[in-house]
Image 1 (cartoon, rainbow, N blue to C red):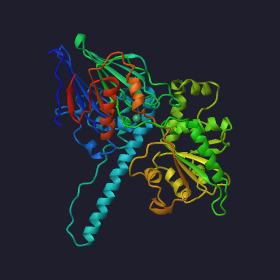
Image 2: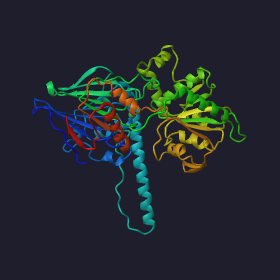
Image 3: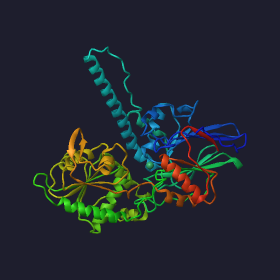
Image 4: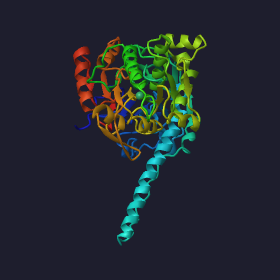
Length: 505
Ligand SMILES: [Zn+2]
C-alpha cells in the first residue's frame, strides 16, 4: 500500500506532522515522530516512545528517524512505560547526539534505571556471540587453507556504559496533571493499568482552532488488573493511536485466584510424593520481572493467608525481579485500594508467609539441591529465554513430582513457548538434552493487555468521535480484525498504518 497523505485541515501557517516509525504491523519498537511548525515559524520536533525493536533487531541499526532529521534535532522524548519495546532505543538515540528532555512517570524512571542497563548488557552479549561465531568461522577457514578474509566485528548498538548518559535527561511527569513541554505542546498522563508507572499519553499540539489532540494508549491493561488502579477514561481526542495486542482475541473471563489455587494444590500434592533420588518436587514459576512477578507473589500470599493453599516456602531468585519488587514497594501509593491497604497496615503485599529473596549465590545454590519439602521458586525470564530460571528448569524438568507454571505471553522460539505449546518429551537446556517429566501448566489470566472488547469499552467512553484512529502494536491479523471490531461497535474511522507512513493532522 502506498503511503497516503491525509487532506490538510490545519491553517497554512501551522502544520502538525506525525510519522509512524515503529510498532506498525507488529508488536515491537514503538516509535512516533511529531513535527509542529507554529504560526510564528518555530519548529518543535519530538518523539512519542523510543522503543527497541525486539523482533527484527536489524531495524534498530537502520536510520529510524525521518529523512533529514537527526537525533540532535529532537527537542524531547515522551515515554509511556518502562517496557524495552517502548523505551530501549533511548540509549542509542542519546549516543547519536540527542540532548533534550525525556518525559516519563518517575516510577517508570526507577524501573528504567536497571532495565536499560540490562538491555545494554544484552546488546553487548549479542555482539560478543556474533564475534565469537565470526572468529570460529575464520579459524575454520584458515585451517582449511582458505585465504583469511577480514569480516568487520559486530559492535553493540549500545553498552551498559552508555546507559547512564540517559539518566540526567529524565523529567518526571505525574498522572492527571497538565504539563507544557514546549510552546504549543501540552501533555497529560493518565493511568494505563498495564505495569507500574504506565501511562496513556494525551498530547495537545498547536494553537487556536487548529489545535489537535492525540491520545496514545501506550499499552493498556485489563479491568480489575491486580495491584494497579483502573484504566482512566479519556473524554476527547482528535486522533487516537491504540495498541492492538489482543485485537482479535478475548481473554478467558474466570477467577484468577481460583485457577491458581487449584493448580498450586495439585502441584503441591505431586511435590509431596518424595523421590528416593531427587527428594520432593518443586513448583517453578517463570515470570516477567516487572509486574508479573509481583502479581504472582501477591496472589500466593493472598491464597496462603486465606488457607486456600498450604504455606509453601517461596523463593524469589532473580536479580532483576528483586529490584523491580523493591520499586513496586516504593510506589505502593500508585497501587489499587486493596494493595495499598496491605502496605498501609505495615505488611508487605509481595511477601508470602515463608518468603525469601535470594541475594547471594549460596541462597541460590541451595535451591539446586534436592528438596526436603515442596518449595516454590519464582524467577525470570517469563519465557524461560535466559536468566537463573534456566538452571532451576534444568534441575526440575526431569522430575516427575515437579511442576512448571508459565504465567505470561510465550514468544515463538523461547523454551517456554515449546514447553507450553509443543509438549515435548525432551528439551535442550544449556546444551544438555533433558527429558521433560515435570507437569507443565499455563495461565493466560495474568495478561497485562486488554482484549478487544475491553479496549472498545474504554474507547466508548470518549464523548466525541475522533477524526481518525490508528491501530498499532499488533500483528497483521489482530490489526485488521480489531479495525473491523471498532468500526462495527463505534462507527469510527480506523486506519492500520504502515511503518514510515506520514500523516498531517
Ligand atoms: Zn508494555
